[in-house]
Length: 392
Image (spheres, rainbow, N blue to C red):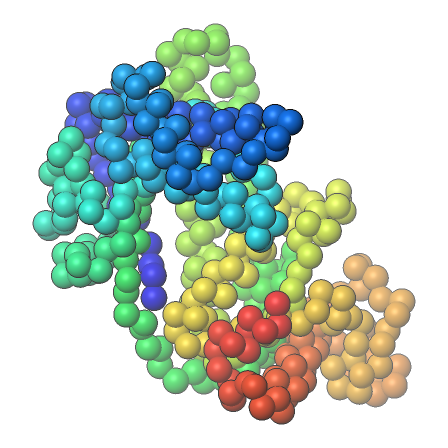
């Protein structure tokens, strides 16, 4: 499996200057080549510029802008590969037309494997100008990197908005085997009051990381707006605000991984709704809360980790009425509203907790989907990625 290990880099002044030039050159090449493709296509003959022609255009750019020759050539070539990938994603996967990169956003550039010299202890050698760099990561990741340097595929240098430097190494790591789970299958319902509710009644709280820190965010934004434009104090306040945002995002990411790891450790099959987050965001009363939950990110974490650990994730249709069905007798309560947190089934008289009942209905629907899949001769019993991806 491919896994990314993120290193915090501690560069000296010369290395920072070179890294900033490298990031700027990479962004310049990407934007210039994107503009070149757009310009050529807008001409009457509607010419589509090939990847080979982009390579020739890069050579012309180096002749026109001499300072580009100071940057590592393979990093600039990776900018062309990234642009080509962005267009392929646009045409094949409908992920949106490639956008121009801004110097005010997070900066990054990619190094191929032959541009990374190696790791020794807590020091990394990337290229000649970025040599013997001290880094920090977890002890387990540091040990793994030192023993599996031959499995490194690529590396990405990035600079955050707060000015910190990171290096993400993509490495081919053997699959980790988890212990036998205590549950065969579980259904999960995701909400706003509680983040995740399982069919067995377990609840994972919504930590409300942004809402609980609204006061400090507001104060920092007010301080930033009061500083004189272009002053050193404004830049210091901007960095302070960026660092606080990064801290909150790190806390949220840690929590998402913690919840996903517990669910995958304890269950062989996880059944969840294929949520239409974009549609849910149209509800302006709930949009801020839904955005804070990072539902799509959590789903993606569950999906790729299930492939790592040989677990199954099954998705039920987004229009499945999980909250309105009685999980005992199947009665549909059509008049149920968002304010109704508990309700009694008029047929079997079962008292339901709205969220736990929804999780049980999702679990039951997952069992139905699996039974249909298992009856097909083309599917193997409980085969992880085959069954999961067939439902998307």
